[in-house]
Length: 101
Image (cartoon, rainbow, N blue to C red; front, side, top):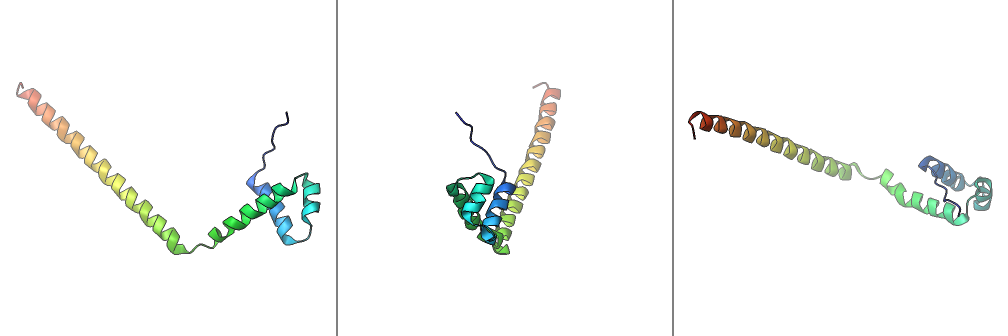
């Protein structure tokens, strides 16, 4: 049984760009790269679906960045609280052991 070939994103981009440039037909590209036309069409569709993300507004990215910053602040605060709790626990345990309890 033949194994499926895998292609790098760079290779897929190269094939799709050849198709979109219009210098070669879909059939020519498929023969040249030994690919099925359905594969090339699927790559083209995937590329065109993802293309609008390149031009996404910075506002949507800044919202994600704000959320990341908020979560980082929370993680820092929790780490600090944990450190304080560890120190308090060690101080209390040392006092209790000195008092013989």
